[in-house]
Image 1 (cartoon, rainbow, N blue to C red):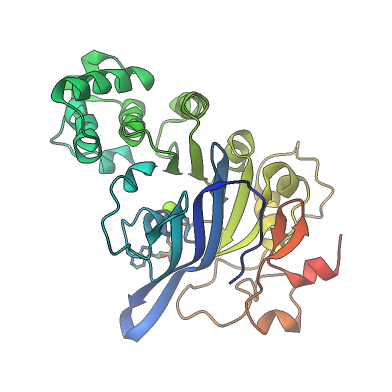
Image 2: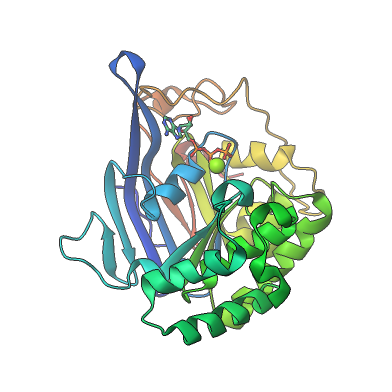
Length: 327
Ligand SMILES: Nc1ncnc2c1ncn2[C@@H]1O[C@H](COP(=O)(O)OP(=O)(O)OP(=O)(O)O)[C@@H](O)[C@H]1O
Ligand SMILES: [Mg+2]
């Protein structure tokens, strides 16, 4: 296990040694998530970044059990949800909710907004019909829609309005933490800022914690307290956003930041370019996953997958080469 104490205070969400393996043709194994540890404290935003295929959505889907993890532990405020508890845990799944990238795909086209928002209330809360109706009206207003939208179906809404419904559905049952999987990337550029603003406003008002999955490092810098960088199923670097962006240590993080069109990070870093494309996650060798692409690779990098090494100040990096050779 590679867990490093990241000093986030009382974690609402704790993920330990999470694994997800998809069987693929020829009896081979696609290792989509390979020993991930995460902590999210009450009220904070942890961003999960990394290129396409690195396993971010699979982590999210395992946490909320949309798919079954292959191994590991997940707790919400100290109560285990992975492995599956033997007795029914009333109310535990209410505490963690998810907003999906594509509100089109995640809203049932045959349900109007009222029905979409009423469903989690019926499922998780013991409210009367009148109480639920009141809560539904409150929710549409919280996300910047009006009671007139309640009778509309998803196809009668704009992309931004649909995502507002997805957000209202997620907060309907007053969760402690919401997983946001690329919540603005399917939207028109002109409405992305509004939806991000809404998410930040709701976080403040409701004291929500977010696990925020994003490709957009500028957005991450704007919204997140801490960041975890994923490459091929593993977290290679984690720490406060300001520290990681100012002084990225892992060659993969450096490459990711070098490629981002943001100058004001003022990093004195040398630009890092990786050779080739993201490697295959099928039957990976027991070695650093960046071997073959990394300009700093040493023979020792092929002798086992490195664990996260604590650099202090809650910053950790899974690369002994850069730790031994400070920049
Ligand atoms: N149901 C599945 N069956 C087989 N392989 C899968 C399945 N879901 C995901 N994968 C594989 O797992 C790996 C991680 O995928 P995942 O969608 O989690 O990446 P991601 O980081 O969210 O990428 P993106 O940024 O494109 O959303 C990929 O190699 C993907 O092809
Ligand atoms: Mg994804």
